[in-house]
Length: 162
Image 1 (cartoon, one colour):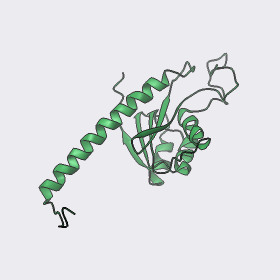
Image 2 (tube, one colour):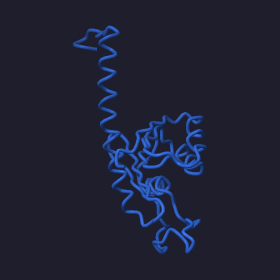
Image 3 (tube, one colour):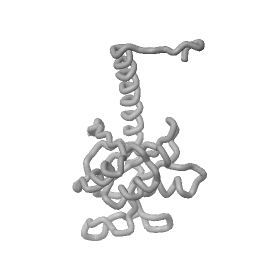
Image 4 (tube, one colour):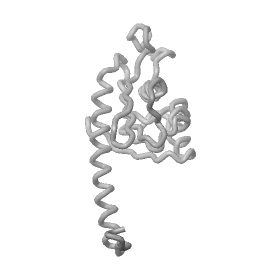
């Protein structure tokens, strides 16, 4: 409504505004993903450092990086350089932080440096996250297939950090 009158746009005006919104969203997506890469640097893991941010209404409501649970030694790999079973993934850490706060992940966007595994994909879906933006693909794409089936919007933005 515009001063009590219905405002209608023709198809060229509508696609122009749609394009502007997409460009603005891409700018935000890129910025949040860069921040997730910075967060990944906090990980003590040697093999792979992964960072995650959960954003809702353009506010960061949680963050996470892969690492051991609170109170455990900050060593993610064993003597043979194999990741220890107790290491939490970045997105799991971020979701668990929200769970222990007054916030909710419902309708939020997850920005992550590495696409989620199958186990974390279930957490993402159950947490109500509606969109996942990732920079690198995990070795197994079953997590992405699950999220797609669950109706979670997936956006791949190639890693600009490399």
